[in-house]
Image (cartoon, rainbow, N blue to C red):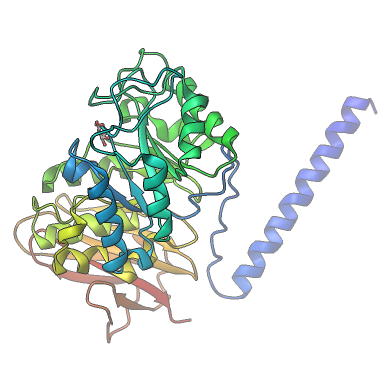
Length: 411
Ligand code: GLA
């Protein structure tokens, strides 16, 4: 036998042993008569920063305030996160978007906070936010300017800016892709990723590259989340369009790296209560970052009821980190579903039409065995349904609404 043949035979034996072990494990699961829980995929990441094991939760200034940001707004928002109880539910990041800086760097080449709107400086603001037990997020761009072109971007200054952010106590960087030199974003985003890593401070890294560059495909080794879509707008059609685009990339989401269909519009006034329920529900089951985008200083009870739903948040934060998918599309009404820990499944019925519809969810579609009965918990009504379900469940939904359930097997 030649050496090459010996190596071949050894490899074959190794593969056969592995297959046997895997078969045994599967048989064990079957003998327990319960479906095997999907193991969390180990994350092999270039950016091994230990953050984002569940989707990030917090607030960002852009959707509601665009360039009208200042330190009073940011401090009051941080206060509101605490006083409304949202911080306790997990909303920790207080993120300033575009327009926070001076037009020019200082003589040493450092980014500088705008002297009029942030007179106390970013380190002091970071201290204030941390003092409330929250986390501090900031924004820059992988080009020579930011998207509003009111301040410099970080291209060519990545390490210097990463050091600056770390010295301010920044915990989250949203890194946009404007005023860029039309070179591949992969290199530019990797450079900032390495720079953040070099600071030694764990900083959640959001890759804000729009869909045409498909960051879902290359982002996991570089960042903790990546945009999958164009910008959201505060209306029903745009929100659903964004949700659909994001769903396409479902398989790329995992603990440590998440698809980002953009920030929440709940509470900004462009949709009805029922439409916002659909918006929040889809974002939650899609394991999207739950980054609020409304004015938290004037939070209505309606909005608080939606974004403060502890059961829906728990689905988003489930440690398996598997993004739900659209498993049945009847045209303008559909069923979304995805696995949760503990052999549970989350199911979302969505009616996009204006008139009411009756929608069936089949076990075969949502990935559970046809002969296993399940009990259902309604996450918006906060109640267990009296009947149990086997094979399917069918719901009647009013126009532009959703119903969301967690199914738990009875045996
Ligand atoms: C881009 C981003 C937005 C926001 C603006 C700021 O459009 O997608 O989320 O950050 O830039 O200029």
